[in-house]
Image (cartoon, rainbow, N blue to C red):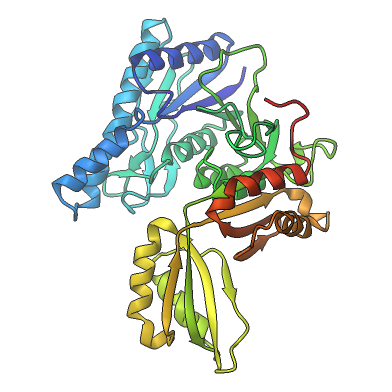
Length: 412
């Protein structure tokens, strides 16, 4: 018997018939003798609807009350799923985040999970837990930020020492790239925590980045699979996110996947004085405003004693970033600010980069051969990312997928 946490996203919970389908899938695991706890998201589109209510009520809403409102979506689905499970003979009980409780920080709308009490875990009864929510020290409802149900599920799995955490989505696993762009993309059987963390951070939408980081920290084995496939004899039909030690050298490839992210904006400051501390005057105010900066390029200094500095920020933060920089114009000393939203970040990810040279060179050459200009570059130990014009997104992904030998033998 295994102890399993099953998490179902918004598309899986979108309506009573889909909730019944989820209940049948849970029953399949219970009938197999497993001890099951379930974490659910709100119905698809429900959280957006609740967020809009808050904005209509007041653009300057109290985040504590915002959390009360938006947490209600998961309360509905947890109760409905418990009813659906009971209707097919599965003992089940819903538990809200404050009832367990799931203790969190007091950063409303972006809280961090602390401790989860486990007295609610009972043999023979399925606990249905709303994701995305918890309880602060002063007994206020808190939420974890968008996509937080993945983090809730991993945290619950860590708390009850589950054998694995199954994340059910509308895709059947993690692919070498987006199969809508590359039909020959392959589903991966296993991916390391580090690779999944990089893929999630550079545009892969399968898992929330925080949930992967927590799984790596706590050693929780995570499986990504589809809630729309019929359950079969194979207990792990999706993609397993595991520690590097679980992947044999025979299974390991130099490159695991290609990701793309169109939610980046490029900012260039023209004629920044070329002096010690100049770059700090740019990025310190951005950091103080909690604006994340990704790629950074500083050009060779002009003869005039100035240089151009280019960097990227999330698209949603562009307006704030421009405002912060313009208010610091005199301190920084730049003459002009130029921004561009017609860009895409393309990333190549794989733990094999640690032991194989030439990965970046192949990326640069493959793009150059197709006339794709690189606007900026950033690297980590297992990732190389480049910024290109958005018109070349699909071409770049296809070219790199083939260049690194990731195409499946037979087209999907």
